[in-house]
Image 1 (tube, rainbow, N blue to C red):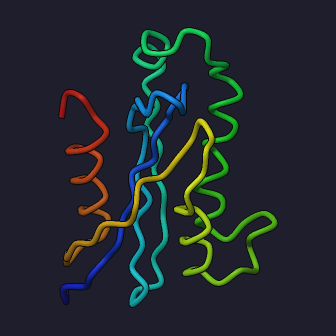
Image 2 (image 1 turned 135 degrees about the vertical axis):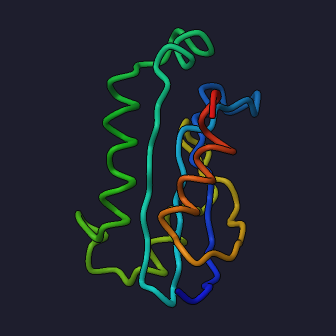
Image 3 (image 1 turned 90 degrees about the vertical axis):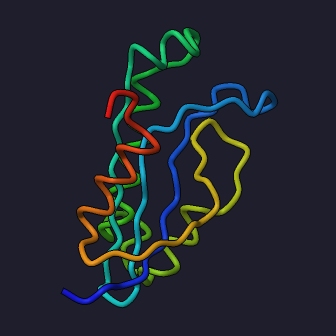
Amino acid sequence: MPICSYEYAVIRVMPRVERQEFINVGIVLACQAKRYLQARIELDSSRLKAFAPQLDLQMLEDYLKTIPLICEGKGPLGPVPQRERLHWLVAPRSTIVQLSPLHSGLSENLDAAMEDLLNKLVRLNA
């Protein structure tokens, strides 16, 4: 399997934007050469409740569910080219859900790269 370059961003929940404190809850990974754009969300509800008890978790979960759908090309952004969808997702925002700037990597297996990033950046006990 040939090595390809990819880009990724960390999906973050920042309950109080002015404090710049956040919890990583997922990854968006893209490889233009393989037309790969996927997001994985792993929300640790108990951790988030301890961090921000005032947060409406149902509303947050509903919002987070839209990120993988955008990656899959569903919804109003469906007709938009994959690269533009990625850049729309990572555009700076002042909202509770934010994505990090894009970072890059190399991998033979993008699904394995996604798992590795989740283990390193999102999961606490991996």
